Image (tube, rainbow, N blue to C red; front, side, top):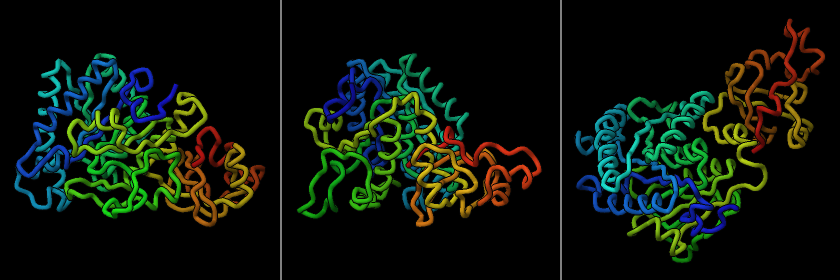
Length: 380
């Protein structure tokens, strides 16, 4: 059984584990936390738990809350230092609020602060998976935010939409619900009277991406529709449904599941999630250390399930070491795959265009079987 409609998000048999992402503009108003709205949302989360569903919350709002308390301009986003300071102050208030309101329903909140590296490094990703699994098994409600107090521009998710998708992947969730300030994805700017809400999307295509608007209405958040589509790509590759719903309305979860208002992005077909967990992790990576450019023959071989050999590489970009994630693309710039390199960049440069039989002489030691092995590669 799999999720095929918005109502399925409230069905424990089809959606035993749900990730709900809440943006800054929904949580924080001009006068501080929108407490009444958050209380109502927590009531919906508690109802999901009563139905037998595990719930994970990905909560923005720390920077907005901290900026207000510190009197920082631009909502605390005027500089990296401002954002880090605001997050340090705001995270205490935010986690305390979630703990208090969930506690009123007899639920235990657990705070996790994550950086991009925590979910991009394979070992740390598996550690996060183990922690989330244990918390859910113990009956807690994980409340997750990006660790903005220490994250730099280079190691940030930058928005909690993509973080929510990665958390869903790590937790083995069935679906992600992104609560936004719009009903879902429209075929054009929703301000256009002719705009139509798309109820279901089967795969993220160039046409779908063209519909996205990178702006955020509130100015408090960092993500727009573009980041939500990127989150949908991460989710669908892992076999996870993703929904965009309007959080500005009363009872936003019920509005999605009972009234059917929102956009459902269906996961990709084929393959059991466990069998391709590593490939889904690779495909969802947001930070790549370099790129390998391949010829038409190598591109076709990759599509047929082969490893990437040096003979088919025409150029490389970036500085990377063995084990780093790299993009594999064709001469036109089209991304074909992500994979873990078996060699560092300097070694790859020496091997480009050469047959495997020549590698030992070129390197002075026995070569590995491929530049990127098919077991460490995922097609995009």
